[in-house]
Image (tube, rainbow, N blue to C red):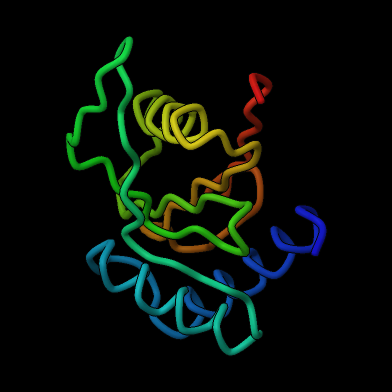
Length: 128
């Protein structure tokens, strides 16, 4: 499946989750609900995927974990915050770089209305 089709499916599932649950819940609730919705769409979804950190020749197990990895291609990072801050974008970009993935979605569920370009941000890793 092409990355654009995967992100289309993820966005649709996120809208469904937000419509059913609304804002104000813990991130872990949205992660679980979104994983369920994506699996219903017959997508391969992994949650809490560990990412190793390699520094020079040493592999450091520091506990970096992706919220969701969809079809082994797209990282989905879930937030439930008032406003997405620069640190949230940097976190996802770091995950993309460390995992050698090209595409990620940053989704903030703590909003009255889930909207593309405001609460759903597409991040591309140009270093792959």
